[in-house]
Length: 286
Image (cartoon, rainbow, N blue to C red; front, top):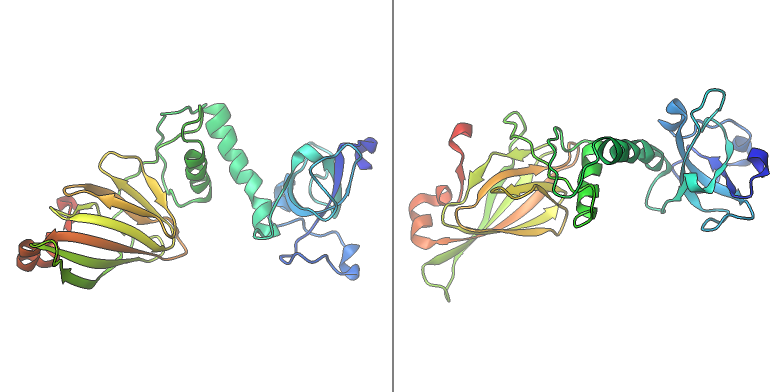
């Protein structure tokens, strides 16, 4: 084994290829660029395990891994075709992750763990203010917060003000029916299509009850003084009459998101006021 023959090391081949197949024999001898950001900061990369030391457990040749390098002066880090490293510095990845994406994850989650876990020492119940919550580190923070609920560290609440410059969603009423076994009530289906980076202004739904369903994409949702929650495709929630829907936006800057809202409202109120009966935007945003 390399690195002074340490038996706890693995040898990883760094690849810049998006496919999982090994590189051709003609490219094997070339010094590959070790995955985008990894070859710039020389501290992280992704590739395939080619050999393991006798003391290594949990890895086998052929495993797909993301790994950290050594940025110390005089050390080439990840800027090489093959590298020997301690097995603690590698994590197996799945087929669903490309090498390019995998190689960028350590700096995102490493930044999160260092800043929130070691520097700020965030603990359960702490709250933080974050801007541009759709960014990579912010999304990682949301994921970690959701995973750590009920644990002694890294439970966070994300809060940010509504930005009127963000594009508005397209709202379409898909259906409406009077409910025969519930006299005086009407059920309405409303489709809310968010463009990339889209956001709805803070609003209420009057005396109506609303159930939300994420048809596609990922959305941020905050009602009343509850924490911001992240809903992905298939996610649902309920809004009681009078609920203040303070945040309702697309979590992605590049992909659209679609919601279906099922609204139960008094028939006479809806016939009198139309859509104004089920959607009242906060006055400062009119």
